[in-house]
Amino acid sequence: MHVVGGIGWAQGLLRNPLPSYPEAAEMGAEAGIGPTPYTDYDQRITDRAVEWLAANAGGERAFAAFVSLIAPHYPLSVPEEFFAPYRDLPANTPGIKPDISPQEITHPAVAAMADFFAYHRAMDTPTADLARRAYFGLCTWLDHNVSRILAALEASGATDDTLVIYTSDHGDMHGNRGLWAKSYMYEDSVRIPMIIAGPGVPMSAVVDTPVSHIDIDPTVHQVMCGGSGGAESLVDVAHNPRAERLGFSEYHDGGSITGSYAVQLGLWKYIHHVGYRPELYDLDDDPDELVDLGESAAHAQVRNDCLDALRSIVDPQAANDAASASQAALIDKLGAPAKLSTQFRINHTPAPAG
Image (tube, rainbow, N blue to C red; front, side, top):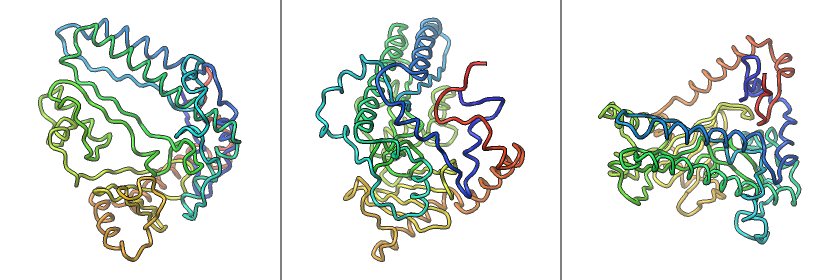
């Protein structure tokens, strides 16, 4: 959807210095009511998934299906039927009216990201209000499509012996802190749905243990092959929750002036920016991450423990250097920075047909 002539979002390779990104204005300009190429895409994918399950899920042969829907990704516009439940909610309803000006950002890496992905600059108060309502409408649109897919699975008779995993690739700041979209290491962006149901899964269990996408691989391996390949699966975690399990995320993409990593150790959230000061949040006392303890003398040991935990997974400096070198090689291959600025530019719109 984002590839033209074999090349995707080439501008994202340029990180030092960051280029301008005028396409960010599209988010505010396109907020509204009505279908988009993305909702049309979700409709087609859902229709195909329903057809495929009807043809393949009811037999004796084992099957696996990956169904990828886009909503609630921007453009923040949704058909009227799904916008309607949120149209008349008061503006002070939690989650409807955001602070449209970013709170004072003192961290240079976060400030650079906000300056690049400057979606807020095209968001006056009415536009932001409309965008938030449309986002919730898109969530309802997603629920509608997921329900159609699960109904097709039920109609095939395969629900009771099929493992279903529901997750997302990222969250969205969605106006919180005055920021929009993904890419940040804050909870709005990195904490995502992970719901599983099926054989061997405890009914209605809520597990606080951190998990991530890498846990899907051993889960699928366990279901399809009878073992998890030595790694812990999501089904294992559901039966044996452990607070000390590590949550992890990293980012080296467009808008970032350095590699950023996040680990959750217990209820401590540590954000490591290579070459810059860290951030630290107490998710128990400060779930909105408003009090940065990244330079608090009283929390030096906590930061050291979190950094050790991060280094047990990855060498942040080495990974940052490797990402930068890989991107530099791609820039050279594509014709140096000057040529990248003339490549097909996208914010979200699917590549034109043909």
